[in-house]
Image (cartoon, helix red, strand yellow):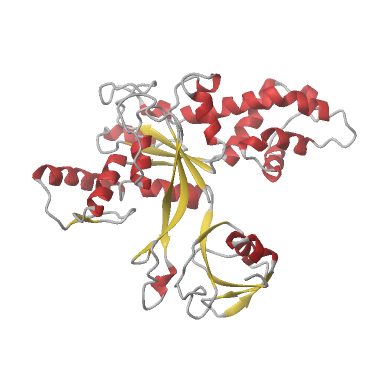
Length: 393
């Protein structure tokens, strides 16, 4: 399952984001280091369900009238403070937890209502733009330290006849989640001495930054957009980073209202409807949330997760079935599974994603929409419904 980590300084709203996105109960408080041990839960990315192309909806528990929700793991870790890569605060614990993430959501307090240490200040007095590169810099310097501490092993291996720098550096970075193809691609884009003994700190730091960017892409959630000065949001979005205005508290309120039967709302919707009895105070709060949603086309929480998976990680959703006519599994469930695949994946890749035995026994695949066999090298696309024929049952 794809993993997304929530990063940010203390009190930026990470735990509220996590609670809204997973509906799991965690500590949420107005002081630094509310989160000590990482929280892990299941959230979802949203896409268009293929059942919209049929006369009836699929009825899957993760489909809401054609809005398909695909599970991902969400990790909420301890807040970061400046100097975390040197061990300040809970820095090392935080950074260790990030190694398992495929992508990172940096949660920024767009209101400017907390300082760099995560302590409350008057709204608008702290510049949130300073936080954009904060997490990235801490991660890069932490990884550079790991490379530096393990570089002696690379130098030692370089003295052997069969030395390959790609493999040696991959050994150093395995714990960070970097694969050899990613290391190879990164090294091709860098200039460096062929002899590891001639590498400088600058070479190692450049390697760390490039590997982090390739293996841990970042999307920024400009949180507290409901109380943030408009100029803050504009400046945050002017840079090169992908920045999405977000109100985690607003999303949490909408999900709670929906669960209580007071609202009609699905995560990722751009609006909601009040269908139950609410107090004047609740109505006023919902109107404030609605104003933000109208301005930014939603609360941003679902948009951030979708951007991380479908844009940064360039994944798409495919649907494996056993019956290509009815789009069902062996028990008659319509579109029972949704699988996130890397761009360029083939039917065999889908088979392995379902189960290793299915992949090992792969024979051929059928495009369930077109009712025709597709080749093993055929590249699947978003929304494909595919029957996998395998010797495995």
